[in-house]
Image (cartoon, rainbow, N blue to C red; front, top):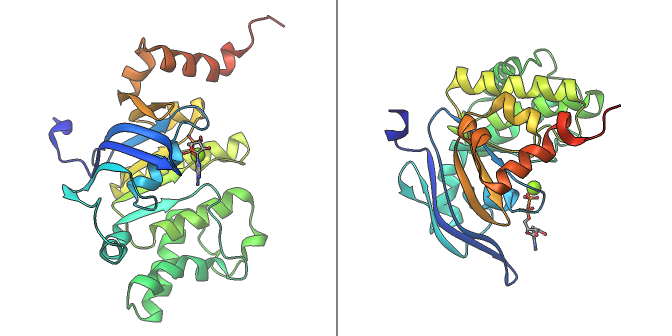
Length: 257
Ligand SMILES: Nc1ncnc2c1ncn2[C@@H]1O[C@H](COP(=O)(O)OP(=O)(O)O)[C@@H](O)[C@H]1O
Ligand SMILES: [Mg+2]
């Protein structure tokens, strides 16, 4: 059984507050190896906060975060630095450094975390650009790229250090539907090919159906569902049913045209 395998990451009883206001309530979640888990829920329900906590970019108020079974909740930022290369993240803004070429952007994590000689860095950068179908874009400036190409360049940078788990926060935000679909396909194919465990925050139903193996659903800071996509779609939990009903473009309008 694949579920018997140790999760790459597991979150236990996680609470998080912002300046006294509670945002996450006893969240449990696990991210099994090689699977794509979607974190979904309405805007403001705590998805980004959960992702930031998992990466220890936000301090949880209480609870435990395990990475390959190791409790990382109390590691210092210095200790975390050693684990950082194994965890990739692509934030919503996915900002590239505008004054750097694409290759220089992708090289940043390699320069920060490794002592690779320049020639090797160049080879790794080209290989990562090939992976995201941007071969030959080394010398382009971010401003010369389309929105979809910029996302892929940012993805190449995220993959630079061969992370075992990658977190995406609304990767398709701001892209047109066709570009968004091809980014989804790329994420799925890279996850399969490189055996990367993926966690994607999104509220786009079409995207969820395309990419999710599993789903974690948050409702006002509580994880009310965790299971396979099919279990999610068949669930009779009211918040989940409402989410699917309101997100389905085919059912959004009741009146026939
Ligand atoms: N830095 C912050 N300081 C205070 N409140 C915040 C901060 N970030 C998010 N929040 C609040 O926490 C809640 C969850 O936010 P967020 O995790 O961004 O939700 P989502 O990603 O699901 O839209 C929201 O009510 C939001 O206003
Ligand atoms: Mg968010």
